[in-house]
Structure formats: C-alpha cells, structure tokens
Image 1 (cartoon, one colour):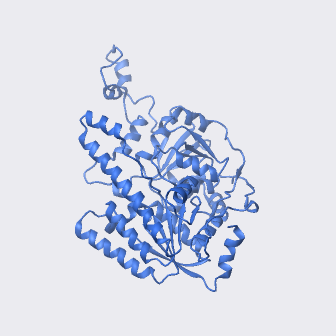
Image 2 (tube, rainbow, N blue to C red):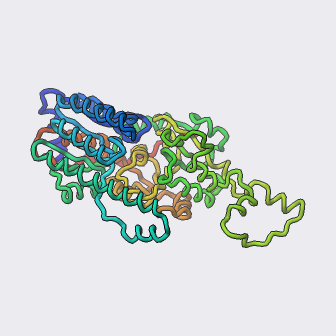
Image 3 (cartoon, rainbow, N blue to C red):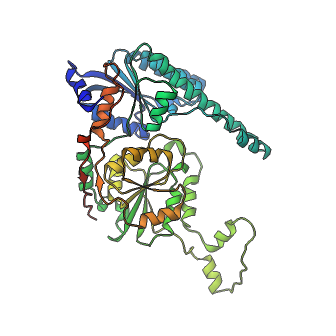
Length: 470
C-alpha cells in the first residue's frame, strides 16, 4: 500500500471514524507519553477516545483487587463495542502481573473490539529453557534463582504464545492488525505467528515544527542547576527513570576519561514504584555515586576492594595520612548533575541543550525506546549502545546513531570526545506524518491494507541543527 492510498482512507470516510485507544495514561509510564502524542497526531483523522488502564487495580496481587481489575476491563469492553475501531497500546505488564490474568484480560478486549489494532511495545518470543544455566545454578546451590528462572521462562512462554494465538483466531472473523516497532518483530509476527496484517514503524512523538520550536526556545538558563557551569562546558545527557538496564554507570565511568569541561546531566530519578519506606537511598543511585567516587576517600576505596590490599602502605602522621583521608582524586561530584524527574517540556528541553544525548542501555529484549526517538526528532547528536533494539531503530534512521559496545566506557568516552560521525543531520523519514498513515492503515476497513513504506518524495531534506544559546 502506498502513501496515496493511505491518505485516501480519510477522504473516503463520510465522517471521522471513532477510534478507542486502550492504554495506560499515567504520565509516569513511557507508553502513556506515546499515547498522549498519538492522541494529538490522530485528532484530525479520528474521533479519539482514550480508555485509561488503571495500574493500581491491574497490577495488584490481592485476590479481591484482582476481581475489581477484571471488572475494570469488563467495563472497558462494554464501552468499546460501540466504536468503529479499537487500538490497544500493549505492554504485557499493563494488564496485570500474573500471566493468566494478562491473557484473560487481553482476550476479553480482543473479543469486544469491532475492528482491532494492537501496538506491541514489547514482542515476546517463546524460547526454550536454558538447561545448562539452570544446572549450573543448581550446582552452585542457588535453588531460589533456579526456581525464579523457570518461573520467568514459563511466564514468557505463556504470554508469547497465547497473546498472538488470540489475535490469530480473531483475524478469521474480523479485521485485526498488529503494529510493531522493528522489522525483526514484523517478520516474526507475520511468518512465525501467522498474523495477516502487520505494519512496522518506529515510535514517533514530535512534528518538525514542534521539534524546531523546542530547540529555539530552550536555553541553559531555564535550568537553575546549571547556573554555575561555564559557558564552554560540554553537556552529555542521559534520560529516563534510573534503572540498572539504562546503563547510566557506563557514562559515569566514561566521564573519568573525558576532559574536565565535560559534564553529565541525568534527566530522571527513581521511579515512584521503586520508592520504599525506610530506605535511605535507592541502590541504583548509590551505585552511580560509587562509580563517580562521590564523597569517597582513598582509605574507603581500599577497604571496599575485595581481598587483602595488594600494596604496602607506609604512612607518616601528617602528609600521607592526610592524603589517604582526603576526598578521592577521581571524585566527579562537580561534573555529575542530577536534574531530577522533569515534566515533558523540561525533559525535551534537556535533550535540546545537550551536546550529546547518550543511550547506554543493556540488552533486555525491549522493542522500542521513547527517549531515543525523541532525541532523533529533536536533531540531537545521538550515541547509543549496540543493542538489538537500537540496531533495528537505525534501519529506520540511517546515518543518525553513533554506536559503541554495551558497557565499553572507554569506547564511549572516545566517541563523545571525537567529532560527530554524521555531520549532516536530516529530519526523520519515519515521522509523525508516516505514523499517522500507519494508524489509518491499521484501523481502516479496507481489506488487505497490510504494508506501506514512506515514498521517496517524503525523504527528508537536510536539516540544520538549531543554534542553542547558553
């Protein structure tokens, strides 16, 4: 299907069709941020209504609350039946914690929808158990770890097989489409899961006009925490809630190998769901502080090293003992800036002021990342770890992402300090307009509207980076 056909879908309709989007709408969730953007993008082609998935109900383990969560889904099912089409912004965890709960609630939504599209933000793959790893774990006496690994494998298998089988059965009696964010996921959905109507498109949030407006209006002066930085400071940014898989520690370790003019800005904080009573500091934040030797002394560093000291210490009472107890010479506290958990405007503005936006994620099997898509739309210089997800994203945005190996902080430091690999940055060929065509195609009543690609006429012209004043 070409773009002209997709555009005609809206022309042929006598009225704007009613589209129900079933999604979490809590702003703390990345899917919710995408749904907010999608609501704006589709407002002129659909009459959009959002059905918010209540996460307090759906993610509860309490039996009574789980019954209330089932009723919550039933109420949504009763409402969406009157719409022309339904889209589910689907992440397994947004429908519950237990696999059986997730599958049951998903099937109810599939049955209730007249026409259905499902946007997979994660596309699980059934995989066999890692037998050798399990045996090794058991031989080490780590029985609990082995039991947890078996439970995770079983959960993944149930979800990956039963969710797609529900769609496969539904497509025999009504129009069903799957929207995925990588070509690898599209191949598996189409050929391994035998879904008939599959469309792939990366996440898209900002129009060119919105991105340009953010770049023009944002300056460092809007961030009081940066007031003391010299104008020549180079700003390296990382973005999102602080979590192990984000790999922020890799950037801090890289900072040790960069000139003192480089400063790290961390736009994000502890996720509210991770806040626990009586915990003095979250382990993830404590780990970042250790990586930066914040408030550490040489003496403390020696004590925290495993095993006996490998060096002999001969100290006098004045000079050398004073050196040992003074602030660690590699303390980065003056070059690491925790910017807190900003709202959407500050989050995007933070990207706009950075000289480099870094995404040092670990490989966790995710299919998409909202922040890196937003950074590309803003025209930022983007450096990312070589995960499967980011390699897939680069196929949609060629010559835009500079890569380094996961966890290789020395390579990352060299990449940040070097001149940009891609001097000319073009506006994304896959953007909010092509994303709009995807949702028109996926939710249309036209049979066999299954594939499309942006036409060459939509190829973006070279885009100059906006001048960002200090």
